[in-house]
Image 1 (spheres, rainbow, N blue to C red):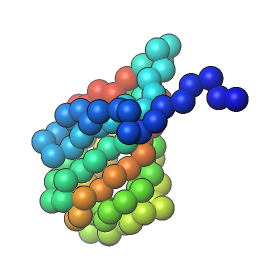
Image 2: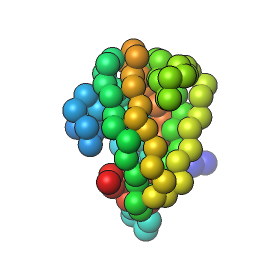
Image 3: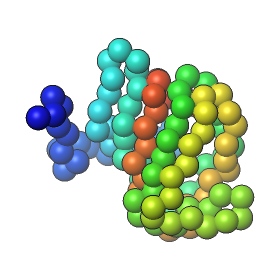
Image 4: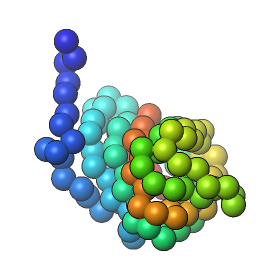
Length: 109
């Protein structure tokens, strides 16, 4: 049996680090500061190039079309950005929902 269970419908959407981006925190690791979140990007959102100085990021697209460097990716695509590595810009061509894991505190630079 799992020691922790989160039901998506019980978690509120919260403002993300950019306009048009929302986060639903499913789990927070109190030891590392890492989080597992659903992220929702409104259609047309353009997230500028950035880094996460304190965490590796793994994102899995569940819904929508996501553009990276002129290539459109859909559901089933997994992205990984190592801690401190610049990535983006990202463009949500439609509404996008991803399951994203940050293995340390979610900070943006």
